Image (cartoon, rainbow, N blue to C red; front, side):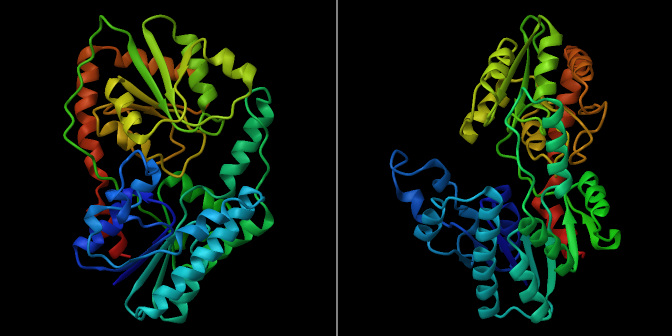
Length: 386
């Protein structure tokens, strides 16, 4: 049986929902589980809280700590790294206690995620269960990429501090304590190996994705502007500055739009908005609405554990232009284009190719099919084969 733990609604509960349907989920431990929120009028219930439940998990054994305690903890004055360590320890200890009390033993598997799985892995070892750890990002390599990019572009965004030693020690101990370290991409695996994780311990298993609704193959109308979309945190590590430079170079016939949180410097943001319509952070439904109106998604990340937004776009029939420093989603020349990092001209060239209506339609159909390759069933089978 499987004992899962996760902070947040990771991948919209796709993996635990699938395991539950197969009768293989013994327990899910999570920070917030709010089936009651479905009964509260939307105007009275925070949008994020209403999403902390999955109807597909009805009848599953789900445990979560006090919601009030979690909210109060958010008001503490501390760095993000200190908060992640504190919350990881607290949640990990809660999940480990619940697992031990509910029969964890030989033949079972424990699975959790970065910075919030150490206590569960120790519990698994103590009870002769299999300990699986999912590293959701490339580890300290991601922070190094962010730091170096901020040094090269000091005008774009505030400088960020490197992770604390306590945080780095915790994730390193998770790698050491796990029987298997699961990553979502070849990029992440290479980064972890560079950080000392044995290659023999690493396995690449992409995250679960379940398309919503039935999208149709897109048809681009050449009489209109070609809509180019960026979705994600507007930061250097995600390559937003590369996207903005491509917008500047692309000229007429294109409309560049972006959705996501941002902390850009005022002057840089003002410069960028000459070429990009920055929509800010949007509810997920509004992001999907933007995708439904776009013609291509550009994901110019410099380092990413996977980039689930690629699949969300493909599931709506959008071709994707992406770098290789993320999950292996885009098949170059089939459902999108894989471009070099930090190359705005490559973005411009790719979207110019996609303006051809026939090519765009062909890529759109291939993108729809590609989004189905990352099903919860496929992920669960890969995990069980471990």
